[in-house]
Image (cartoon, rainbow, N blue to C red; front, side, top):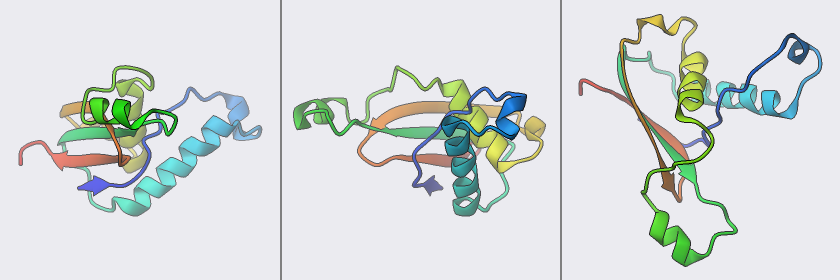
Length: 118
């Protein structure tokens, strides 16, 4: 299922974030709330995640066409993106035993969450 949302990585949180809200932490919790609203299915134990990262608006059309669909090889790290999705969609993600993830440049931001077995 494709979820139209800008992927946000999970930030490192501290005890202070409970009362002094940093902007990155607030954006992360807003992302989690929006993802839960848009994806209301149980998370499969074997899943495939494809993160579609939006291209910067400052890029030229030529550069955008050249990178469309290509691997995204910069920050945010893929493990932090995966952590954000798993933590947002389930309380205890220890049941997930198989995971495939990739991140690609795209003109439409979103996350494709599919059952890996089909």
